[in-house]
Image (cartoon, rainbow, N blue to C red; front, side, top):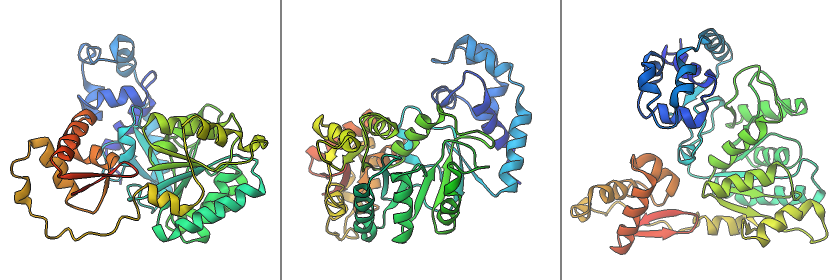
Length: 367
């Protein structure tokens, strides 16, 4: 049986007027159960909550809905990932609006070292198919995990190419796990789950793939990955939204160029032209930019005594970097327990002291 704490975790996502941003604020002061038992006067004093949202919490009477969701989770062996859980995709913690709770069906590591989103048009061309197949094949030796939205078009191509090359692939859904949308991808979804991949969503069971769910889904795709690659897209659409979100989250964005006369590549060309994405041609280039081709160094001889004179924040960063060859800034932020500004200040100080080196792809390693 799942923990009783899940009842309150789920209920927090069901309270009217309380979205991911407000839930994140509340969780800085209280555990989920404590939020529902706290006095209104306490809740409304929390910055960003106020009397209206505090009233919504105190009047919440939808615990039965959370109980129904728990039954669904247990019946279908779904893994709930609360924002404080170890298995929660930690790169999302650096987004201002991380999902409070995610539902996961699969075995892929959502905190693996190399997570890449591959997205694009639903009505793809043969060019997009060829580029996607070649790109994923190129990335196979890097053992990346491919993330996309399980939609028609490039999303489906990316998932299929990953399976073909024995790479884990995760589909982020805009609906509950009681269905697959589009239904034509039901077989693909099953193959993903059974081949070390998975399906991930913040929407509870019986949530339909309504239009307004897709931008919310796109922010998860952008936020949980190190890089977002746009294969082919028009000047408007979901892929452009995802690319913009990735930029706002300070993620690396890449785009495959197309003919200037091709409207289906107009979005990619626009992103490149306006410095919103780096021009990408192949997987080798991506690996180089992301720092995945760095030569391995012997790290066993590093001695902790080198860091005795470092400040407390600098020591935290150095200890994290000592564990492996290169660490992405998102992982440093998530693991350090420091604010992003404190991490930035500590890293800058370490760089000035020649203790830390900055690598391509927002990664860092000990000098």
